[in-house]
Length: 167
Image (cartoon, rainbow, N blue to C red; front, side, top):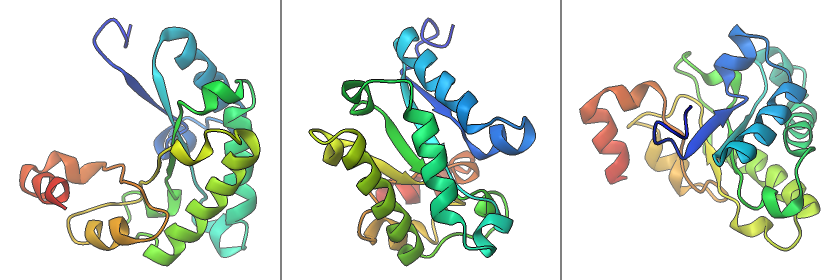
């Protein structure tokens, strides 16, 4: 239905789906597969909760979600997925990862993508999506490894959105 309505992309595994609906990494993986069957490009979101971050489990959680989210598709399909690091602890809290934090996790994701899709890994966009706003977008976009941003609530404010787009 989304494709018939004109959609080209679908968010999968975003923080709201994980927190509100209890979506698991395995369910996100099945949704990635469904996106390809429906002719949609999936944007797989991965990210840890505050508890997982504080216990030092960011890398474990992000890799588990990434692996499960991409497990049912071929390397050729992986090359057509977008990935967003969306730390759950930053969504709607006004907190966000520092550019250094985002770069570190993006490097981890890139390395794992290289193992999964050695020929095309460098072309897979990795975005940052944790409470992006016009105040932090310039620093996040200037960070090494951050190739774009996934904007949530700030996209509802025309002035904030246009400021982010200009950045």
